[in-house]
Structure formats: C-alpha cells, structure tokens
Image (cartoon, rainbow, N blue to C red; front, side, top):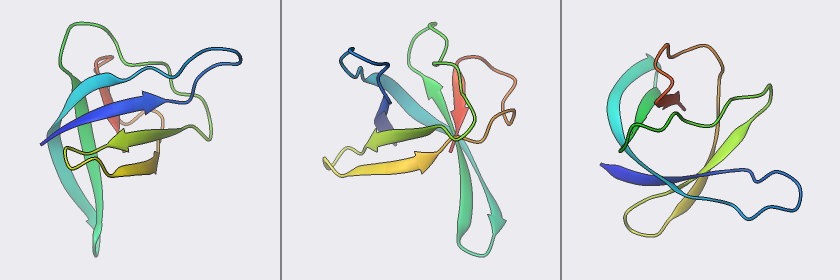
Length: 81
C-alpha cells in the first residue's frame, strides 16, 4: 500500500506531502498495529518531536491522523505509526 504523509507544518509554512510505502507491520495488541512507512526516495523523514502526529492520505483519498512514537525505527527514511 502507498500513502502520502503530511507532517504538521511549521509556523507560516505550507504542509508538504511525502510519498511513502508500508514496509512492515506488526500486531502489538488485539487489533492494534504498528506500521513502518518508508520514503520512496533517499530523503530522510522529518524529525519527530514529542507528541507529534501525522496526516496520512490513503489511495482512496481518506485522510487519517496517527501518532508518531519516537525511537521505533533506526532508519532515517522510515516512520512508525
């Protein structure tokens, strides 16, 4: 599955979308999953700050928000939601 990620914009900036794909998923509790998303290119993902969230636009146009737990991926081109 492909998704477009939109990190919350900094003050006075436009949001940007980053192309990404689901690289891995792991069930961590009943009906609760962690998804590792990887960038399509070589650029690193935006830095994660405490309490960060991200908007994910799915291929059908649905827009959903997810929490970004820090420290779950060692790869700078990946985010875990």
